[in-house]
Image (tube, rainbow, N blue to C red; front, top):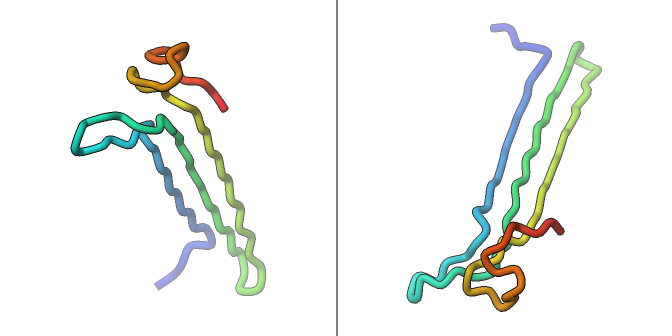
Length: 80
């Protein structure tokens, strides 16, 4: 069995923007984000290895229609 000198790993999380109160169906908080991570390992010999990690996070506020901020209720998302 032979092993490759390269390996990779990826992960993402995408939060839809609202916490929903199950009792009242009310949308709360409006925090929306996407984050991702990619790791690449290169190991050409038994004594040399290199690990590269790329990471990105994007956050924004998505105001629900019943927002405490009426000026942005129902409007576009606001970047932080």
